[in-house]
Length: 86
Image (cartoon, rainbow, N blue to C red; front, side, top):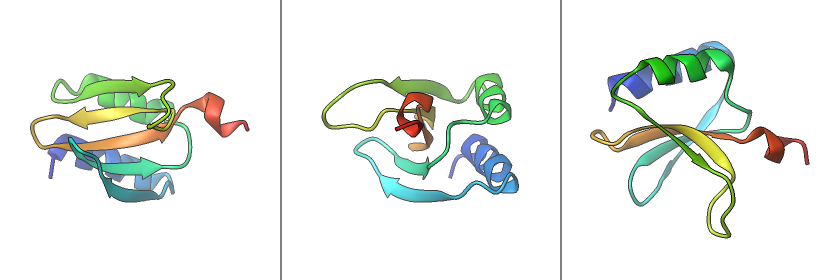
């Protein structure tokens, strides 16, 4: 497990957010159902071991954003705000 992703998960879970784990082709992903809180975004951006990603529109993938530790092959995923308004 990635220490950087574990820190983000700990922060999210301490805020009462719940995640579900799933396997992507390139990583194990922890999915959340709420938009990414600003403190989690700041913590992810501050960690040089994580890469930010954003998936806006695709017929095969959700509209989401998150951080991935490519070396450890683990990520966190949050829906984009536009998708939570529907």
